[in-house]
Image (cartoon, rainbow, N blue to C red; front, top):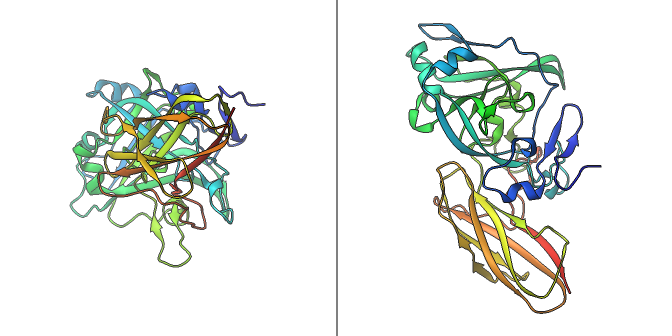
Length: 344
């Protein structure tokens, strides 16, 4: 049985696991408690990263090569695109994540833009594909590697601060988190942060791989398909836990809030089902790519069952919806979180 202070296994093979709620209370999630997502078994990696495609200077990098380049450290919140899939009805296709497939870590590595500059992309390049060493059978494919892409403009932008990361929380990457190196794409759902990175190719046409065009897309029932990109705003309640019993008195609700569209500007809580929203205390961002702390002092006077909802608004004006935006593959569910507690 999974401990309240250990990862909760969602699938044993390939290993997928959610962070315990207690781990999400800290500013940085311990590596051993950071959520894990994989589509295939842990791969063998030859320790080389090949840079190719439509470039003037093809080359190969090793871990030692990367460590000799200028080092960049970033604190980044990563969230699985399928986080809270269990909150959508009817149940979509995919891993049954509840709401804890999110974590924040301190990543270290090399800026992708600097690596691509050395490669000198062709003038007709439009996209960059990133292939992991992980592979296996997948639906109609007998064997396929996990691969995703970004636009060349995004990949080349130094301000995007996309990392080829080789360290996590001050230690070398471990196998579950993409050793020996991986991509870390700030602001985007974690699918973009390809693990066990083995190959980078500049392309002269859009990438049409399975995990770009057939998976990790929003398949809406009433509108055109859209790609999964930026994380949507979300306020997560980290204390108290859902369903716990509290004593009457003053209690401080706590949580985290984040968005891929910029900082969260306010978090509101509601203690009824009637939309009576009250402003929580929101801490300013500690960095451009990490979650923010929020709190709300709650006066628990009456015994019985009490509900709490939390809602985030980001700098772009995006507000969490009251109910999930259903899509066939269950991505991007950022509906307002609801918990209840018993008061005695």
